[in-house]
Length: 115
Length: 115
Figure 1 (cartoon, rainbow over the protein chains, first blue to last red):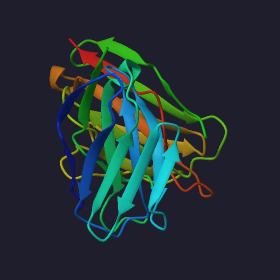
Figure 2: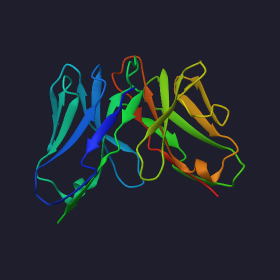
Figure 3: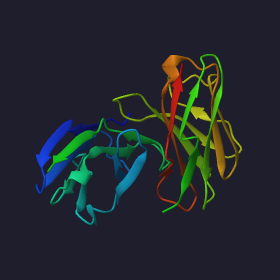
């Protein structure tokens, strides 16, 4: 059974700081790993999808890395802004799954960036 | 990316009634759809997987007679919460995957409140 853990559970930083969110997963036989953003009371926004053959993906100020052998992924946010405040979720496919869509989510990191 | 539309975005119903939530893929054929729910301050948990034209597969602990899932076409899946109770109040969100897609795309979610 896939288990996904995210640390820290919450993070509060001043605007402009670079920060790292951590995700670990127990079953490393994954097709990909995905990072999402969720604003309060809202749905999911996909941020980055890293295929198993890749080691990292970048989109603007976001960079996600994947180390399958150690079962870890990190999301790096550069020059954080108040608009980055949200819950960040890491999701990995279920253990032994043959479907891309059966995901196990971590508990999330609640990020607050204050001006 | 592919677009998944979920309707309604929120619904309030009386205890004992049934509520239907729709999930549509707008620009691709969704061979598989997934239903998740998220209780307050918790992460998303997979409820069931449905393949077009087949019976849904439910995760352990999810009552299939209470959460009826229909995936009758390649663009539409529905989740019906039957005889809803206040403990069914939650955020329900669907995702959809197609044969040519390497990821699943999420709808906006439905906030269900049972009073």
